[in-house]
Length: 445
Image 1 (cartoon, rainbow, N blue to C red):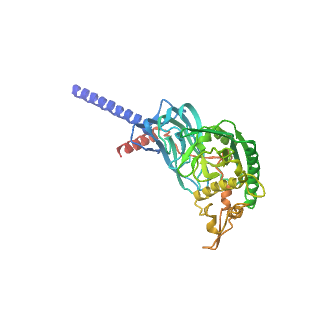
Image 2 (cartoon, rainbow, N blue to C red):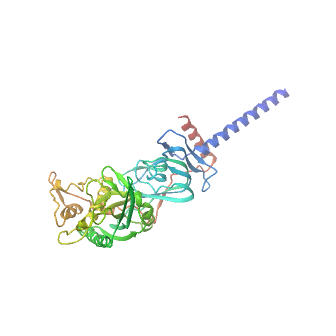
Image 3 (tube, helix red, strand yellow):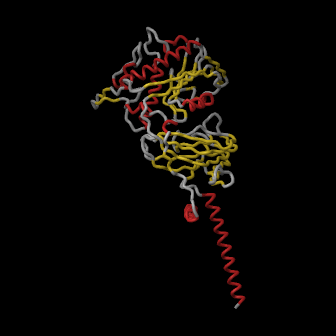
């Protein structure tokens, strides 16, 4: 009888130990795989690990860890509900180790932002200790977005490890301001190698004078053309450091993308909280003998952005064409290229907000023609005042006044932020048990 009771006790002890081992294993699995409802995604099915790290973390909770052992584009993300036309701010602490991009000269690295968009923070590469990263965005006409914590890029893959901690989402106050804070950067030297040929082009004093005059006229045009609905404050900054990279596209040929100039200007852009950026660069020498190869004869490119901030490129060409930029008898609108490229940003902002507007380049469709002295002055005025007659409907179309309040969010929108809880960590044993069950369920799916 005693032997039987002893065997029962031993059996119970063994079962208890086994159950404890199973519980510990389950708890460790939970600790490593509980992502608070975040989903995991990877472009390629290669060696990548998603986990919660209990050893390398910024605060009391386990960090979110992405490790690309092979080149890949990976993220964990969560779909959240948002209020339309409202600013939001994603922030967290980020640590990186040996992060490298597969394609040099192309954006990629560790970012936070919105999945399936080009809305993300400036990528981080290399090895870096914990640093604060934030990204502000406007929900526009969206009711849901997917916030993303990423190791990779839209057109790039990365290897290395990234840790994310202290994730926070905040809602700000919608913008009602119609004043735009503009940064105009003059690139004083472009020194690039294209297909084995070296191009070295520098702005001259006349170029710089023209930029100053045209920015002042651009400011006046925005006020007058919009019928006083919007105003502009601007600052002109000269970049002395030579730009040594250039981007190519089949549509435009070679041009300066945001990626080529970001190292020289983006810290200033963030500090000054610019709403829009002009980059002005000489891309042809004064005699027209040396010219960066382009497709067509464009003097400006717009509708681009630098991490959520509107970006326009102004190309300076040879002296015989300076009438393009200089006020005189033959040209009453030398600032036209600045107005035009800026309007591409407003055009894009409205389209992304779900508005239907005439395309900026469709002026002939509505009976407007380019004049020798003042270009498309009449078209811009009516476009900005929503005074273009659509003969098919009898309605007047153009930019809505809403366009003048579509600046990118900045810190002013978050003076009184509302935090939105997206990372509820279990606070007691019951919540942890429930979390373990959820992890096990997902593991069996």
